[in-house]
Image 1: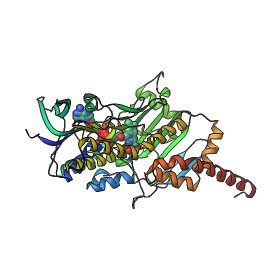
Image 2: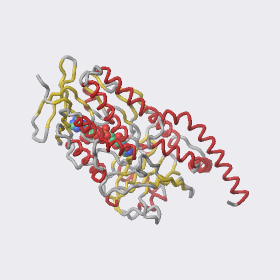
Image 3: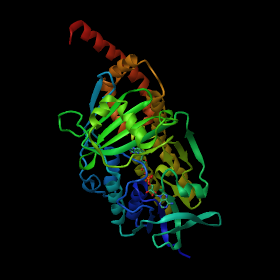
Image 4: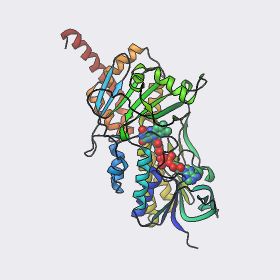
Amino acid sequence: MRPDYDVIIVGGRPAGSTLAARLGKQGLRVLMLERSTFPELPAVSCPMINASTMDMLDEIGADESAYARGTPKIRRVVQALGAGLTLPFDWPAYKGRDYAYAIDRARFDEALWHTALSYPSVQGRQDFNVTDILVEDGRVRGVVGMGADKQTVRLTATLTVGADGRYSTLARKVGAQERHRHEEHPTSTLYAYWKGVRAYDDSGDAMAAAYGGNAGLGYLLMDSADGTTAVVVEGRADRFEGQPDSGEALYLRLLRENPEVWARVDGAERITTVRGMKRIGNLYRQAGGAGWALVGDAVVQQDPLDGQGIYNAVYTAKSLAWAIRDWRAGNKTWDEAVEWYDDTVMARTFGMYRQLLDRVEASLYTELPQETAAMLARWTLDDPLLKEVMGKFITRQIPAEAMRFITPGLLVSSVVRGGLRDLRQRLTGR
Ligand SMILES: Cc1cc2nc3c(=O)[nH]c(=O)nc-3n(C[C@H](O)[C@H](O)[C@H](O)COP(=O)(O)OP(=O)(O)OC[C@H]3O[C@@H](n4cnc5c(N)ncnc54)[C@H](O)[C@@H]3O)c2cc1C
């Protein structure tokens, strides 16, 4: 019997909706099934998105004025490293966009959902919970689930895709194998959105400001939609565990620990609950199997320190859409298509993943005396060449693998240049 759909996608946020749109472009009959009712915030996420992500959203016709409605363009980022040391840099441009957004996920995800539905062969059901999979002859044939009417339904498809996030039901049901799991430097995070946070300076510019100076902790304040500010604290997991307080009280105490952060937040109004995640995992999963595939956080999930999750979600969706196109055109068997998809995802994401693990260790788990750390940070992070290269790296304009080779040399040369700058200043007073 002909299946109900060509592709069923479980999960309708960045990975699921962008995949649905790309498959809709190919004319496939797609059904997105999403547990939430939009507009609704995801369980945890307070993200920045880059121009490289927006560029992929352009490809599916997503409307920037809808997904970033009321959200200021962030062109300036400042690192405030404690002891009065601040290092500003401008956001690197990519294909004409010289800004990032600290987007509101409720409106972002809703806008992408509607982008997917604008393709005539794509349908979507919200408030629908997928509870099981249908398997026949060792192949996934669809899903079992329940909508708002509490009726159990069975829906069949040639291919079932899990875009259902880091705790993916599909991954669990098919027994997707885990790979590259890293738990040696666990981190946790707490965040909330506020109104009335003091501006970083008088410039009137939207900003993202990262604050350091507290051992094992980092803070990020990002101007977001409708005059709100995301106030995030992330750090070593032990800074969040075994404490006398938890949740909201712990969040506020950690904010107070950094006087610069507290000076901005004190007197402001918190407008969301405090959300967060303990011991954020880093892992890859098997990309696909007989009748199924995974995208987004379901296939690669990582610490949010470098803000690459949505890029990865949108990129894995793009890559899987290519693999499906080749498979349906008869250019590849399904096994070959999955292998190609997996290779492509690894090639684009794994270098960044390894760099991220190194950065988590260096920034949260390596304790240098504060003066030494501040001096090294000033010499390196204020180096124009290093800033330019790092900006291009974080916006995915330089392959992460290449960064592994060029970073040590860049760091050494920036330390030398930084030392010379200091010496010149001491000798000439300039
Ligand atoms: C604290 C924090 C900060 C972050 N900051 C950034 C950042 O700055 N930049 C960035 O790019 N990324 C960031 N990320 C990562 C980013 O949020 C994720 O990578 C991104 O949301 C992944 O998208 P996704 O579509 O794969 O999954 P999700 O956004 O998790 O969506 C999965 C969807 O599947 C649905 N679902 C799950 N199970 C079922 C089921 N059984 N039936 C039906 N529906 C189901 C869920 O309701 C959910 O809507 C951050 C994450 C965290 C935790």
